[in-house]
Amino acid sequence: MEEANIWISSPTTGPRELDLSPIVIPKRSQLINLAPLGAGLERESLWGFLQRLARAHAVRFLDLLVNAKAPLVGSSPRGPSLGRWKHEVAAINGGTTGYQIARLFEELTDRDDLVSLTLHGISGVPGLSVVARATHACCPRCLAEDSEPYDRLLWTIADVSHCPRHRRPLLTRCTECGRPPRLFSTRSSVTQCDHCGRSKLDASETPDVSNDSSEFELWQSAQIADLLDGITKGELAFRKAEPRTHNLKLSALLPEVRGVTGLARELGLGRSTPWGWLNQGRTIPLKSAARWAWVTGTCLRQLFFDRLLPDNLKFRPLPPSIVSRRSRPHRPAVSRDSTTLYLTALRMASENPFLAPKVPALEKASGVHLKHPAFKDVHFVRLMTLLRNKERRFLRKERVWREVSDVHAAAVKISGQHQRMSRRRVASAMTNPGSFGGPIARSYLRWFSARLAACDTGVLQPKQVPLDVRAYWDLQRERSGA
Image (cartoon, rainbow, N blue to C red; front, side, top):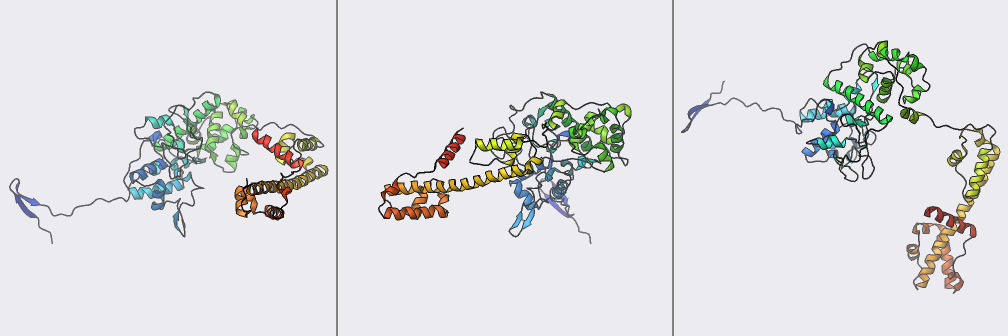
């Protein structure tokens, strides 16, 4: 049965028909439908979006994740807790856990574009591994130019060290306290340090690009930014036939590349090589891929999305500053029957006769590696055993006299004030009250009280500490003063 409309009339409008059809109410979201900021290369990160969403709801960032039951939140008998994110602090912007968190908040905010705020797209490039940054990094000049400062997705990549737009290094540590800003904290913020509260908008202390290493890191950051921009805008499409395999085989056959010694170490690959990437099916770290693109004279886009020709490749060595940072320090050759280690132990024992020399200090001072047979020589082992036993006996003697002297000085002070000799009063007058709980201090206090009750005035005289213990104390004071 159809519902009839009602006619109403008013002095101003006259008679009119009133529509009684049902009103369609749009779907409501559980959280505010907040739009992300930026586009393309200036795309906002998921961490920055959730920071703004928490401020819009007037709650803390941690409480927003707990109440939304994000994948980083664990559970305990006491209730929901954040037990997992000490180990996954960078996962909120990554391609796995970050993707799950983005899908969760898309349902809560009734949006469909939050996955693009994570590294899910660039992490899906075949044969490429991308690591998200565990702490917060930013470009102060970009934040100062924004009408509403927000965090960029490019800054969350661990291998991006410079801002391609302003050609300045990213701010990874606070200029006031020197500590890296944390992603997960009750005071975490895009514009302020969560440790000391200093603003991140001050760009006066960020240095300019001045050397070869900075130029290369700026080029690397620009390459990563170009790759991320192309994936975000949809300009780069994945193919069934992986171009990376063809390009790696082609570039690894360059005569100049094959003649480079220690190329894997220079690229920061450890024992991995381009042939290991191909034959063992390993993924290429983003930093290593950028260095390989530099060496072969290509770019990241061409390396992963285009099939190159031999004419497209041109050998270009890494900057010397990058290579020098990867090269191992020179270690002088030591003969198999060297006595340097034994003589170094004797010299260090003579410089400090109270303590035995430590193995790392011996290794550094003598230049003999820990795996050298001299460390297992019977004469060296016997010498170190004697020195350690001597150190153990002397430290026990020094600890006894330190506690006895401390209790003696406190007891003499209390007796001079004509107060009752109680344990609590003596412990409060000591320099180190924590040592009074041991048996040495208590037994000496009992002996001192018994001699004082017997009217032995000699017990009030200063304690005669052995000469070697006093020398050790003087040596400690000189070193602490220096």
